[in-house]
Image 1 (spheres, rainbow, N blue to C red):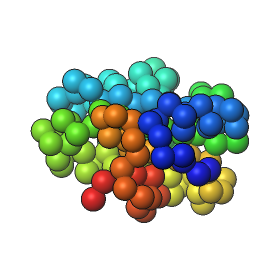
Image 2: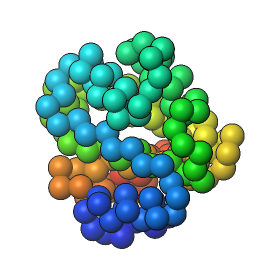
Image 3: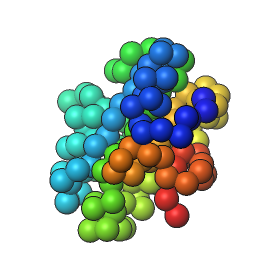
Length: 138
């Protein structure tokens, strides 16, 4: 999927039009790891067994069986800068978990089975794809 250089809404709409499941992980106001895990759990609509830690998040992202069957899934991470600035080590861990999930789905189901878009505050994708994450900063 090619992203039009516009705010995030058109990318989400294009993914939905293609039959993809879309998830928006909005990190506005998130300041702690516990808040991050709660926000991830809500956004991903994880089952009750979700443990709220890095391993549980990683397990959830390689399962996804509770999400509707779809030709692809797009996770859009927005409003992340404050969290990344306040918790740089946790932010890096989150990116690693997301990257591992993208890599897992690429191996298991092919390109596009799971895509992650890291968008800035205005919804614009960050600079180009890096290591499986669209718009990964750095």
